[in-house]
Length: 631
Image 1: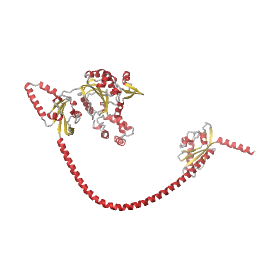
Image 2: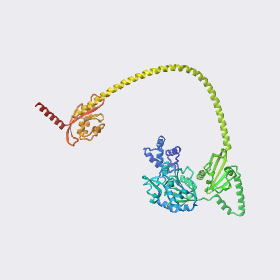
Image 3: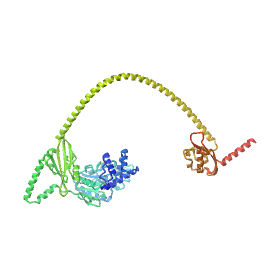
Image 4: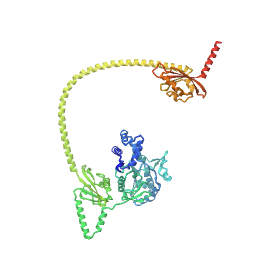
C-alpha cells in the first residue's frame, strides 16, 4: 500500500476495531475494505471515518452490523459445478486411494461462511465411503471469523432456495424436511466441526488431506496472502490438495504450490528438500579424503551441539525433528527414537507453548522469534521458566532449511527476582503498617475527645428533632386540608364546564345555519351538523385540519383574504354569497358571514354559511304558516 493510498482516519478506525473487538482487518485490501465500510456509513449519512469511529463508541451494537457488511458471506452448495465435478471424479478418489483403510481423512474448509461448501464436501465423501465409514474416518473442519454465519452453519437448516443447486438424488438422501426448510442429516452432521478461526492470527489446522478456501484470499493484500499461504503449506500433508476459488491464481506464490488443474483452481503442495538430503548430496560428491575430513567436522559439530549448556532442537523445513542435544533430551524426556518424527506429533510442539505457529511466523517474517519467561508446569507441581528463541536457518539463496529452537532455563533468576520483589513488598508493607499504626493512635485520641462532644450535642439535636417533627405534622395536616379544598373547587369547575359544553353543543345543534370555528392557524375547532349536511364531511374528519386543505364544493381560497382581515381585526363583520356545489353535486348559492372571536384570549374566527335557496324556502314556509294561523 503506497503512502498515497493511506488514509490516517481509516487506519485509526482499523486499529480501534482490532483493539476493542479483536478483528484485525489491516491485512485486507484497502480499496475493498473502505468500500464495504462506506456502504455501512451511508446507512447513517456519515461521510467521515472519524465520525463513524465516534458513532461506534456511542453505539456498540453497531459492531455486529459492520462486521456482517465487511465479511461478505457469498457461498452456495456445489458453487462452480464444473470444479466440484473435477473434485468428485479426480481428487477425492485419488485421496482415498492414497490412504490406508484405517487412516483418518482430514479436510479443512477455511472461510466456510454459512456452511454450504462444508456440507457439499460431506455429501461427496459420504457417497464414496458410505455413511458408516464416513462417520468413522472423515473429519471436516469448517472455520470462519463471522460468528453469526457459524451459528447458522451449525444449525444446518436451509431454505428451498438455498438447496436448489443440490441434485435431487443427494437432496433426498442427505436432507430431512422440517416445515418449509431442509435440515442436513444429524448423524453425518457430527463429522463436520465448526469453529471460529482467524487465518492471520490463529495456528493453522495440520495434517490435512484437502484444504478448501474459495474466494477468501482475494480480499487480502499480497503480503497477507503470502502469510496465509505459508500457513496453508504447513497444514497440508505432502500429498495434500489445495482447492481455491475461480478468482484466485497463486501466480505470485509458485514456490509453495503448483497447479494441478489451473482451470478449476486445484493445486498441490511443493515439498522442500530437507537438510539431510543436502548433506547426503554433499558427501557423495567429494573424494575419500575430503569425505573423512567432512565426517570429522560433522562429528565435531555434533559433539559441540550435543554438549551445549542450553537445550536445542533443529527442525527441517518439512517439520521433521532432525537434531536435539543432551540438554533437550534431558529437559523434555526425548530419546533418539523421536528423531525423524514429525515435530507436530511431539508434545513439545504445543506444550509448554504453541511452537508450530511461531515457527511459521519466523519463516514468514524471516527473523528470530523470542519468548521470555514461558511457564512450564512440571509433574511435581513445580513451575519452570524458559526463554525460547526460534531462529530460521536460511541458505544464501534465501531459501529456508529449517529452524533452530533454543530453550534457556531462567527459573533460578525468576525465583530470585520474585523473592527480592516479595522482600521489598514485605518491607514496604511493614513500613506502611507502622506508619498507619501511629496515625491510628493519634486519631483514636482525637476521636475519643470528639465522641464526648458529639454525645452532648446529640441530646440537643434529638430534642430539636422532636420539635421539628411536631411542626411537620401540623404542616402536613394543613396541606391535606388545602388539597381537599382544591379538589372540591376542581370538581365544581368540572361540573360547570361540562354543563357549559352541553349548553354550547345544544346551541350549535339548534342553529339552522352551518357554523365553523377556526383558530389563528386556520385549523378547524368546531364543525356543526349543518356544515356536515352541506359539504358531506364528518366532524371527526376535519377537526385539526386547515380549512384551506379541505376538498369540498366551497371555493375556500376566496375566503383567505377575508379571514385574514377578520383575524387581524380590520373588519368585524363580512358577508358574501359564493357559487358552490353541495355534497349532492347540486349548484347552490352559499351565503357566508365571517366574524372574529371576541371576548376570549384565543384568536380565531366564526364562519356562518347556508344555502340561500334553502333559507328562502324556509322563510316562505314560515310566512305561509304565519298567514294560516292569522286566518
